[in-house]
Image (cartoon, rainbow, N blue to C red):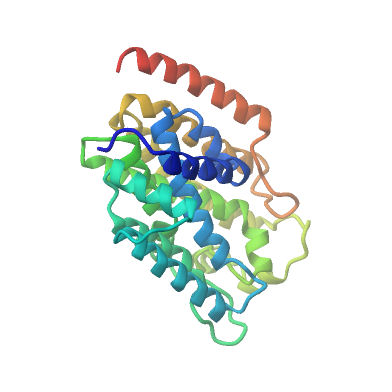
Length: 305
């Protein structure tokens, strides 16, 4: 592992921390609980992911143009990995982080590939859908589990079993995001709830895509969303099993992250899965409370490292 950081790298990490602070929301409250070198690396990875996501989601551009820009950006990143000079602070920070924490570059390629899956050409006005839960799991792996596999390299672990648990933790987080964003995704012609589940609960795809914002869910829709919630709950068990397998000084941050996301799922459940009337979120005061507990645990962890 490298030690120290030059002035240029320090400025690059500062730029990534600013991106994470302004954009990361749920994630950033966990990042703060990490020791500085790990926090810098996590913020760099987040900034890299955010840059790719912003390029993919720029609806002011045609899908083909977005893909072209993403391909150019990724080609530039690969040149930087081969030693090409760059003034891009995100590239500088991520290159340093991958070396410091021995993050396989292939994982970052997987991350970008997952983000670009939503740019797959569609036939006419056909919505983005997933036929089965296995198909949805594959999507969640690409956009969330890969992030978990990168993060545990930064958190530190020795037991190889941590990798499968990190994968499933990513699934828990992404299923929570999918539940929260059902209404917004439908407005963008996307339904991530598996079509096999829609059929099982008697919910039509058209009813999700054409419903009016603010209309409460029907009993069938609540049952559909509750099924996804139950699956997410099962994967949160993996998150709690992962916690003791990562380095002690990283455990408070991991606990904060899991706690915030799990509370988001709990708020959706307490609202009886009404994700149409309003967008669920964890109040700021609760996030700050989770952060305070995590920071206290970090201080205790450092006493025993």
